[in-house]
Image (cartoon, rainbow over all chains, first blue to last red; front, side, top):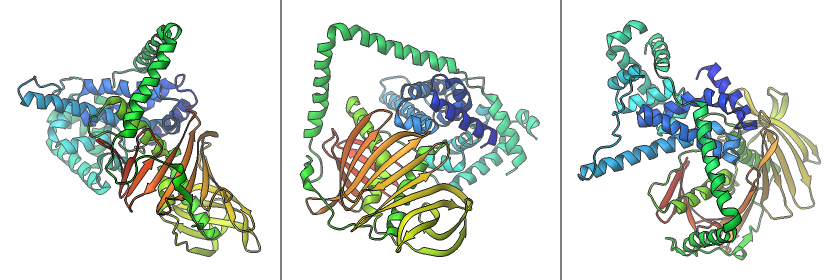
Length: 184
Length: 340
């Protein structure tokens, strides 16, 4: 993780613990990308990730006097974010199962997000397998160390570093020329 | 992997999407929900206070009674009787070195958990199957409380039989030079000095190092009585995080009380007593108090086998806790929560 980002998070976290409401904005600004992209790595849906990010932070504020939050707000955020994301995926799957039974239309199937604000991410998504994309997003955008990704995904660190390296190689070979011209 | 490409792509990808939800959006939603809660309460308090109290009583009974009466899979009784718990006949930590190693090992996870800033330390807690929502939430709360004291409880069951190998010499730490060193599995290397009287420690100081870095500093005193010594330790981390453990031999052969502090404020206090259930099975009685929530309670834990434990003393008649390496599965009928 970038040292400056890490330091920013530590400082913002210390202040947040002292006054969760008064110091919420700098804490949110320091941590929002980590949380947003952690959620996105599961949902792969921009709009849904925005909603879940908001819900995650609202729950943090609601629980700000609780032991877990007081001790480690970032860990609490990540746990809630992950649980909300997994919950959202489960809801989608239930909706999809209903559709297979012919009872309802497909709602929220992955990869259905249409959001022009992230075309590079869409291009990256197309180049990688689901697992590679999740590892790439967690490492490159959510800024999680491999050790933490290993805990998240229950995979050995070696597998994840290899997967990430393979993903970058794939992207170098597979990304469209319009992106590559800016990157090489 | 082309690292230059990786760095450039990462930067470009990070710039390609800006999170649209603002801090104000979150705060607005938070205030909105707080207002709704207040309004909800205001309507009811003056006129329906008696009715509300009755409602709460009904709700408690509606959750507690069925939970207490629900059948569980084990053959053991699902109702707890505290008189079934007796003190262990002999103290398991027979030497001051073992007490030191044990207490440092039990403080270490408490402090690391308390002061970790980033990372998913809390593990995934998610019910695998849907059940009644109130019951699920109540179960999650019980598991959440238990998880905060799980590591010292589990250690009381499995960690008292320590093989402690003390090295003697001159060991350099970052805070000083120490006469003794001991390797503690899963923790690091403990360097320490003691002040002794007739071979019995009076006090000690030290530091816990890993890869040449000082993780925590240690200080301790030893209360010497006629029959037993009671070692009290403080393990100190950064930014006002520290934990204390105190052995109290007047309360039992193995009775330890812990305090966890963050930003110099007490966050959690709990005690653990190793006991026997009906003189047959190892058991631990843990009493806890969460300072920020002013919540207190007890867990009565009985070891059923090397990997299975029964937890009593909660609204759930009996919770089955199963260990699979570091993964812990809490089960009550069809509600399951896994933590790691």
